[in-house]
Amino acid sequence: MLAERVLPLSGVHNFRDYGGYAVEGNGRLRDNFLWRSAHHESASDDDLAAVDALGLETVIDLRGDDERQLHPCRRSPNFAGRVLFAGGITAGLAPHLQAAGGAIDAETARERMIDTYAGMPYRPALVATLRLYLAALADTDAPSLVHCVAGKDRTGFAVAIVHRLLGVHEDDLMQDYLLTNTAGRIEERIEQGAAHIRMRYGAEIKDDAIRALMSVNPAYLDAALATVRRDHGDIPTYAETVLNLTPEKREAMIDRLVI
Image 1 (spheres, rainbow, N blue to C red):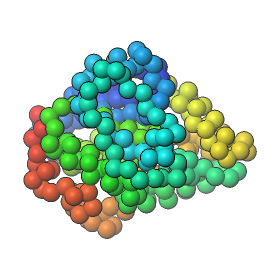
Image 2: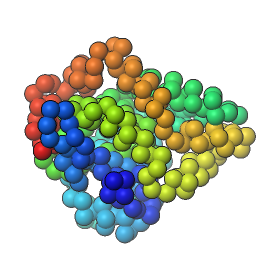
Image 3: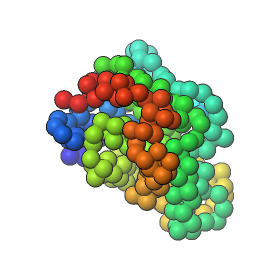
């Protein structure tokens, strides 16, 4: 199942299909229509050709302006889709970097990641781009890709929101989130993340803390969803209140993405 979801690219981590799951009531999500990944700065020419073959019409970049400037994504000369982002800055910090400062141990790293996720539903740049993402899913009958830096935290939250809006069971929603820990070349991804973290904060951060920062954990996503439910009761109400997704737009998403 995992091998069927993952697109094995040499320069882009965690590139996978998050469709195909059963939904409440009846039906399932379309395959090869909903994609997620890390950023594409190191994409090879072969990677770009493989991405072209997916027929992406929309790419949603959850990073801030500063992150895009630091790590510009490669696009194929044949890419004819649109790249959506709302703009705004994030201080250059993906959630795993935001949580990384100091000579922390694994437990502290996990606690910081939980705290970071708890605030994720209201991060301004993320919220603004999620509004564009949900509108695109409602309005466009073509494959899309959503990504951030590592394709695990902001992307994981975005995918969880989309899954729940489309009726994916919460067990499957969490299973998909946790595939980051097994999809693709995990140790290479963690090693690259470790180099970035240590370059920014110094070499004293421990290996087990790095792994906690560069992995996903059910407690992380649960913290974000707990914020949503505390303030709004459920994900559809959050999506309507904060992400401007009307009930009509949600139905349009379901019509396009559930078969």
